[in-house]
Length: 104
Ligand SMILES: [Zn+2]
Image (cartoon, rainbow, N blue to C red; front, side):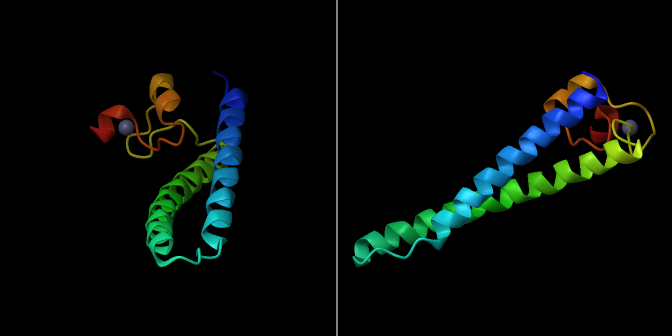
C-alpha cells in the first residue's frame, strides 16, 4: 500500500468514526422516555454508548496523530528504534507508532 493509499484508508476511517460519534451524541441527546422502567433501560444504553464513544474518540485521536505523521514524513517509522514498521502491522493497526519488536 502506498502512503497515499494509507492516508486515504485512515481518512475513510476518520470519516466513519466521526459519523458514528455524531450518531452516538444524537442518541444521548434524546430525551428520556416517560416511563420509569424505560428510563432505566435508556440510562443503561446511554452508559454503553458513552463507553463506546470514548473508545472511538480515542481511536479518532490516534488516527489524526497518524495523519499528522504522514504529513510530516515520520509515518511508518518506529518512534522507539527508528526502524520501519512493517506493512502487515500498519494494515492491522494503521496508527501504530512503534514496530512489533518494540511493542512486544
Ligand atoms: Zn521499534
